[in-house]
Image 1 (cartoon, rainbow, N blue to C red):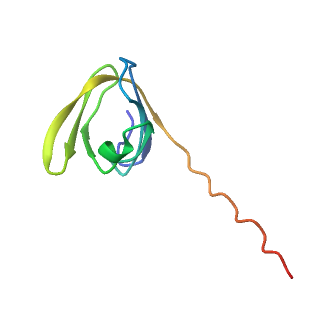
Image 2: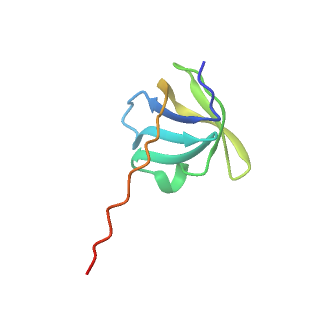
Amino acid sequence: MIDINKIVKITFQDHGQDFLEWTLENGVVVGCEPAQGFFWNGCKLLAVESGECAQIERKGVKMTVKYPVDSIESVQHFKIAEAPKQIH
């Protein structure tokens, strides 16, 4: 079982909708691809199972996402090193 309070990637079944993947951090949507981040980012995930529709809370309203989840996976974050500063 995936801990939704970690960094997670959810992939939805493709039914022609504008979003296919969410990235969540601590149970909150922080990334949405390929589109509609303006709508989904900030939603809190309440419950999710692969093959089922996710339960979320958006602006205080609990709702069910219409499209079933295809997969749920943990995501590893890697810190990208800063470019070295140039000396003039």
